[in-house]
Image (cartoon, rainbow, N blue to C red; front, side, top):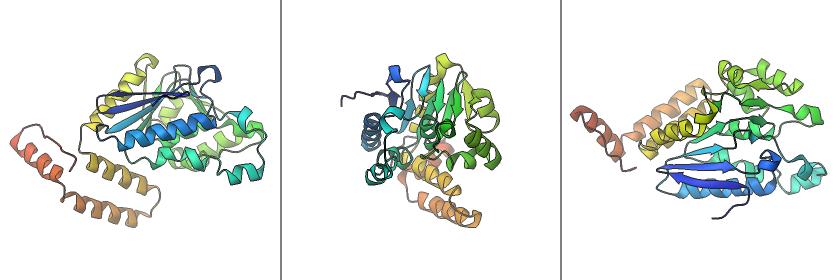
Length: 258
């Protein structure tokens, strides 16, 4: 497909989506979010793809929602159009692993897109923040919900109430990102990580993703039960037999995603 606001390519078993509104620092308008949702759906249904990377430019992952497009919205406009929910939730709904490769500004909605991904690899020039309060507005795509689950209530509250931005180094220290890499290596390192994930059994990878995500939603006892039952179900997979037999035979496994 041809897109106006994103660039999509495949690298082996990895789908790479690049946000591409450079003049607006990848500000998130409706067109971009519709295209992102369409691209994620296409990659999720592509049997050749095992993992997905979402990135921006070296200067900006996404500088926030497009204020010019939304500033005149009324409550009725937002409610009737299902603003944000309609096309932003495609990221968290994707069953395949989605990695955010963040360089430059990831602010407001840009930070929230990264938070909706399964984990974040940050360039050393990345800057994260939820500055909506400065516009007499609030985060509405997960900033007040996912952020506390990742970095704790106090840090999330301070970021949301003051609008303070944090560097990649601080984001790494407080657990917002999984690692920091040089900006020139960001996309290649993220794609390499996604390629490792995509080399494994796809149903097992999706099971693990679902179990980890349930950890934030369930009490520990219920989460452990869900994990246990999912682990039991893995014994029904051909790939489980292949993986364990290959391990015992000291050979590389050949997974068929079955």
